[in-house]
Structure formats: C-alpha cells, structure tokens
Image (tube, rainbow, N blue to C red; front, side):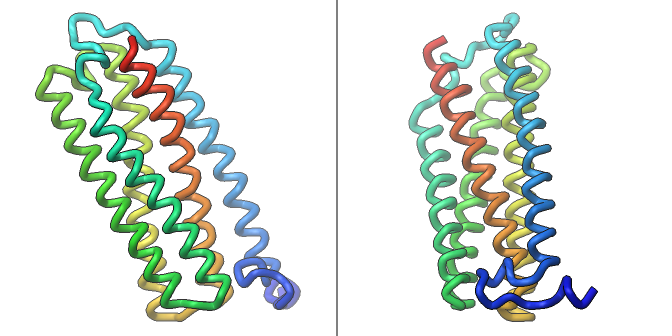
Length: 203
C-alpha cells in the first residue's frame, strides 16, 4: 500500500506514484473500448450511407462553412488542452486552470453549433426517424456530442478540485486523463469531418 503511494520525483507529476500510473494505464484501456464503440458506429454509418428513403440527402443539407467552424473550434480546444498540460508540467496551477477554462469554453461553443446544426436538419426534414441514413448519422454524431458534453462537465469538476486542493499528484493525474479523453474526441471528430461530412458533400 505504501509502495503505491511512494513518490518518484524524476517522473512528471501525474506519473509520480504507482497508483497514478495504474489509473492512467486503466484509462488507456478504457479508450480502447471507446475506439471499438466509435468503430462500430462508423461501420453502421457507412453501411447505411445512401439509404435516405424519401428524406433529403446529406449533400442537400451539409454546409461546409458550419462544419469548418465546428472543426476549428474543436481542434483549437485540443491545442489549448495541450497548453494546459504544458503549464501543469511547469508547476503552474494558474496556467493549467486558465487553459483548461479556455478548453471548456471552446467545448461549449462546439456543442452550441452542433445543436444548432441538428435543429436546422430537423427543420429541413432530416431527423433520426427520417431514414436509416439519418438514424446512423444522428447516432454517430450524437454519441460524439454526448462525449463532449461529458468532457465539459468532467473538466468543470477538475477545475473545482484544482481551485480547492491545488496542484498535486492526484489533481495532475486527473487533469492529464481528461486531456487524453479530450484529444481522443478530437481525433474522432477528424474522422467524422472527413468520413461523414466531406464524403456526404459529394454523394
């Protein structure tokens, strides 16, 4: 038990205890399960591509400007999240919290534009009940959006802990894990941007 809490100052703060190392490893395994989840959703989407029944097609509704705004916001949030971890490793709690807050705000901005996009599609006659294609589309993007919303809430909780407890091995580990989660969501979005939107615009 004592060994699990022994500190190794030669490692980054989030890796300094064996418990932290095991928690981070466990989260990497969890991300493996998330890859399987999104992989399944992508396969379902591609299998159902083109099955629009009597509803509108993606080429009619997808707007490159809106998608680029969402992409810019989310990729920028990945950059600010990286800056947060950089500041954390410099021992700068204020810098860590500042960049995490920027990341959180960008995440909220992304969710706002995505919700507005979904509302527009529904008004144009494309909902989850419209066709197999739109069902798979909303399931894939809705799952990703739900993950982003979870990340925003999780990040808020970590910011509160940092404010109350300061920067230590435990809060550093939590901040590092949320950064892994956030970067993962950005990678998933890149596949959505290319595999769903860009492909859909030329269908």
